[in-house]
Image 1 (spheres, one colour):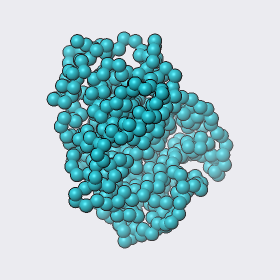
Image 2: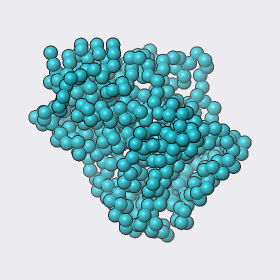
Image 3: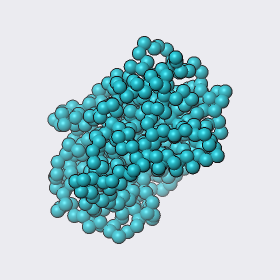
Image 4: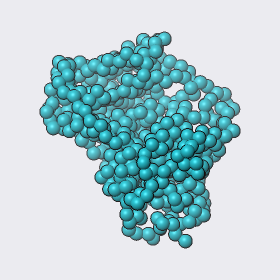
Length: 505
């Protein structure tokens, strides 16, 4: 018996995904898997997967407010989180079904699409399995946990003709689109450099002993771990703090960086990966179980212009509730200032051109003297609304951020992390020698030193990690050169059976 998508039955899907890889489900099938846009004559039926924090606060809440969209299923390995989300759905759909195992959800024929906000290590496998099961996908940032599996997601979307939207929401902004058009018109001259930053306060995640933390009784820990290693919980808190450990997360550059780096690529018109990357930083201000840097500066080299990306997780200074001001100087002496008098995150992108710059967060053009000369405005559908629009129209062009763009922008984050992870301990002087030859990068080094000093961290004694300068082959999505072996070992992860992203999707 076949489902309306030409798929196997629920029992068949479960058998294949549990016993082997899901890749063989559609062997021998050819042609498009859906003959007309879904939802054209009725509601689009959505399942939200991964409901703690962003899954409920953003994904679920947005779909519940959309006419013609019905949330029919919820999935999370934490039954406590599921119960809270069922209450949130409430009267909108009292018959909403719940699942702890995504495989059982994907075998259901009355689900048109999934919208996923799982931890990072589940993004790729849930997307590939969903495509194979005939479902469309909206996948949260970062779309992947590593470079290799991001490419597998692109292949799965194409092979099964699925709508797969990367939930990087900046391309949904009408005003930002106008700013990009203005930059690419050449009115300000050639792009010289793109600065981007995420200054967001992060506290200590604490430490646990060898026995590990306590997994909540409401959690199916085997399903929560999925593709990642399963062992004692390596931190105090199961939820959210997984961002700061490599087996499950990608640090702040992977957490918020994809939004901003996607905007950078968009503004530059870049269609692929940079040719090289180098980074430096460390984890400062507390001693905890975190592995990812809370201070991290990365330089990406494109043929057209470089991108400089900065992460800060400490406040403006010790004891302050404020986050830092962004205050840099361009190669040609332009002052780049983003004032900030708040404890809220200070994030953004500035595109520096020959005759001025564009602050893409403030949607404002500044001349060389720092005077605002033009502003952009305009509202439009958000990322979830764009996803639903594409499902209704059946047009891939209606997806504001395709899986390919999501993969490429997320891969920049992975490249920065890989440079850091194959790096070595260095002094501030050694960092200056290697990474500070460009005046703008040297400026970033000095600003970072001053920021850490204001938080009681002296780099002359604390030291830092100087990442390897890695050359990238953009076509093959593999590193080349001196550090290639160590770097390419981190392009892909080892998977825990049966939660394996297949070589052939």
